[in-house]
Length: 440
Ligand SMILES: [Zn+2]
Image (cartoon, rainbow, N blue to C red; front, side, top):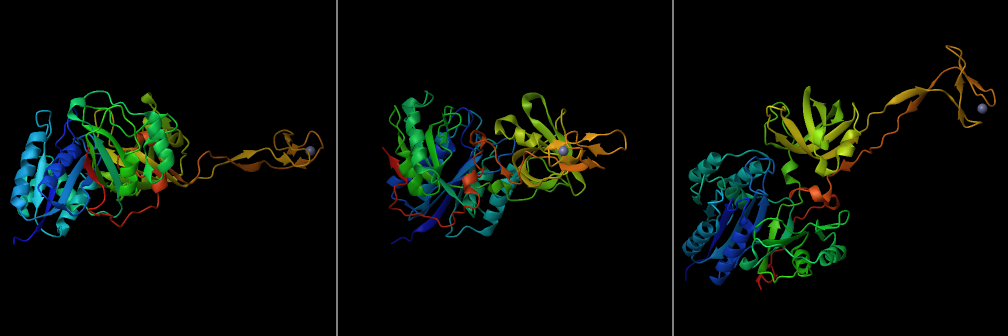
C-alpha cells in the first residue's frame, strides 16, 4: 500500500478589490479535497501579514492548508486548477501558490514568514526563496502572492485566534447583505469574550460583515474553534448561506508589532513599536488628525494619529517630556510630508510632571490669598493670615499611564483587542471530529 505523505499548500493574492476572496478559494479547495478523501491535519490557516505595505490586497491575508494524502500529485493538480479558475487575475490579482511536501516545515520558512509580518518583502525575494529551496510553485500576474504563500506555510504561531467565515451562495454575490442586527448583538452579549469584535455597541453597528462584492457573508472571531463555530450559527440572515469554514489565524494578536522599529533607518513600510519622549507638541491638522514628534536615540520621529482611531483626543493631551510607546507602520515620504509613523496604539509610560506657581492657599478660609504688591508677600483677605511666597501646584493631566487602543470600529485584522492583552492561545485544538467545515 502506498504511504501517506504530508502536503502543505500555501496561496495568496487571489482576490482583487472588486471580487473574490482568498479564503473563499480555500473553502472551495477544502470542499474538493474532502471529496478526494484528503485527511486534514490542522485547521486552514488564515495569516495576516504586514498591513503597512502599499500593495496589500484588502487585508493582506494568505491561506495555508496541511493534509495527509496517498496521492499528492492528484491533490496538487486539483488545487492548481481551482487557483487558476477562482483567482481574479483580470481584476488585478497576482496569485502565488506553493506546495511543500515534508512532515515538518523547515525553519527558513518561519524566518521568511516572520519577516513578512513586519517588513517589506519583494516578490523577487519570494521567487528566489522558492527556487533556492526547491519549492514547487505556481504564480500568475506578477506573482506578488508568492510572499504570503510561502509565509502562510511557514507561520509559527506564538498566539492564535479563530475565525469562522460563512459564505454566500453565488446567486447572492454583489447583492446587499441582510443580517439581523439584533441576532448579532445578542450573540456577542452571550459569547463575549470567547468571541470578539462582532458588534459595536457605541455605534449600534455590526462588525462581522464586509461591504464589498466578495463571497464572505460574515465572519465571527474568537478564542476557540467551538466558540466561533457555534456563535456563527446564532446569526440570523434573510438569505440562506452556502456554508462555512473555521480558520486558525493570527488575527487579534498584534504580532506585526512585536519588533522595535529601527529609528536610524526608519524604513518605509516597516511595522513595529517605538519608545520615546514627546519632543514636539501635538497639533491638530486638517481632517482632524493629530501630528506630534517623539525623540529616541537622538532621532526625532514624526507620528500621525488619524481621526477614525478615536484616539486623537488622547494624542492631543500629550505634553513635551511624556514618555510613550507607539505602535504602527512607517509611511513613506511624499511631496507633502516626510516619513511618518502611522500610529495604531499609544501606551503612556510616564507622564511628565508640570508645575505652575500660584498664590498660597488659606486652609482656614479655603481661599487663595491675595498679593500685597510686588515683593510684599500674600495675605488672606478674610482672616488676615500671611504668607511670603507663591506655592508650586501640579498641573492635572487628563491622561493616565496606560494603553490607549483605537475604537473597535477602527481595529485592523491584527489589532489585539483590549480584553486579549496578556491572553495567549498556545495549544492548538484540532480534532478532525470538530465541525469546522460545512456546506449547507
Ligand atoms: Zn483666611
